Image 1 (spheres, rainbow, N blue to C red):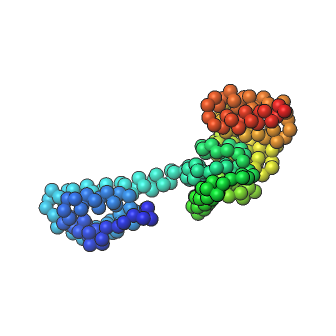
Image 2: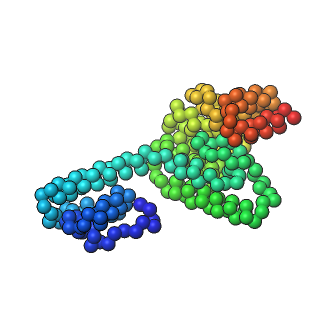
Length: 266
């Protein structure tokens, strides 16, 4: 339920159950309770005790509406359970001036890697502070979700990574990958966390596991190249960056790969 949602008066909800509202008000309440869990629960509860005072044709309408509400509630629960909270984290990074980690996270938008972020103007700092606050709120919301399934552990690990709790991030992303060992982006995101945690060798191993599942995963290819660069394996890093650039021909991440390749070649 949206916190700023304006709820109909309790009297109107009661009259809705009775079937005595005019068509416009009734339609407005139907639209409202389709999105509002709280009012939908009130309507369903009241309906158990109120006998509709409508004619036979409208009584059929109420029975159909009640059935639709039950179905809508069930669909809402299903969608909530199926929703991947990692998507919310990715959306919360859209306005960041600098991405939180050097490596590439699956499904996350591009932003420049600039850990020092020196010399920014006051306006840029204000925008960045607002974006970082948004990210912290999104991470906090994800961490409030309970569960030990792979999807929840993966989202928890990403949330910890984005708020710079890297050790916990590695632990939870490792658990997620262990529970779903055939999910390439879990291994790739684990590689990203290990790079952030200065564990380049382990990051390389995680990237290789991701690529064994999906040989053209751009995130895993990017992270593998970064890990090799950190390990000072020049020739392997050059080959890894070129392999990445052969797959990614147009995204903004390509610029970072070209920059990394140039650094290694120097």
